[in-house]
Amino acid sequence: MAQAPLMYRMIKQGLPPVADRYLRLHVEGLEHVPTTTPAILASNHLSFVDSLMLPLHVTRPVYFLGKADYWDSWRTRWFFSSTGVVPVHRGGGEKGQDSLRTGVDILQRGDLLGIYPEGTRSPDGRLYRGKTGPVRMALEAGVPIVPCAVVGTDRAMPTGTYVPRREPVTVRYAPPLDLSRYREQRDDPFVLRSATDELMYEIMLLSGQEYVDEYASKVKSGAVDLTVEPGASPTRAAEADVATRGPAHDPVELTGDETLSLPETTDADRRGSGRAIG
Image (cartoon, rainbow, N blue to C red; front, side, top):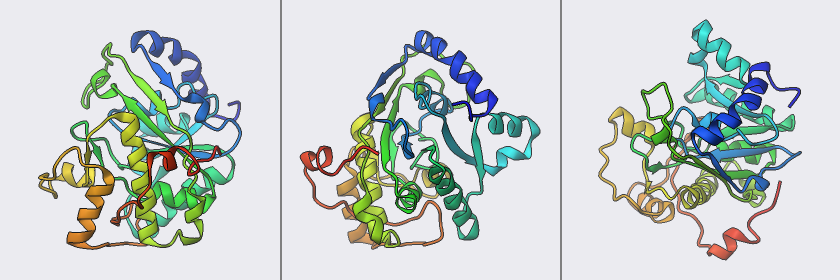
């Protein structure tokens, strides 16, 4: 923690007592976050305060990747730089590769990386299709992913508000997913989609959200007419998508646009031998 930026350390010291009392913050499964080794904390995304709540009781610094646009203004540049947010450029091509490399660098130096697989805040409180960037970084760096969930932050601080409401918030951490079995196939778009769907399934179990098999960014932009049936699991939704559209893959895009169903596994598989503490 001594190596973390000053503002980050100040927030870590001053915010927990306030959040614990005012937001009645409840934390579950904190023991699943590695205490010395690198890992990715992958969470759903409901509110601006998610990035404050998710690492609040983690004893190590958690670094997040943030839009490079935030560095255009000195105010936001100062705040994000001083709280450990690392700027990245969105999009495909070389920018996407640079973003991947930035995340891998953070992990290879032994730190924790916080990331939202949906790529943006949920527009309606449901869980949307995950992008493959987190899995790519985990496989490249050889680290586990800890599925996480925040619950109630959309009520405590809805989009467009600046003062949190006194609403209860819960943060949950699950045992790390060991994706090492995929590492030799980390350039295969089918494998990346399968591993990402596995991750999103775990987040769905933690958060209790309904799942929508579309990218949240496309729904927000109006590019997608949201007519999919809510509540479908990532596995079944992805199977239907493959049947109708087939897989599509941009090997350079950080967030990807691939589709493939999960392999058939039981709950025992997911909670048992398929996991390992990082």
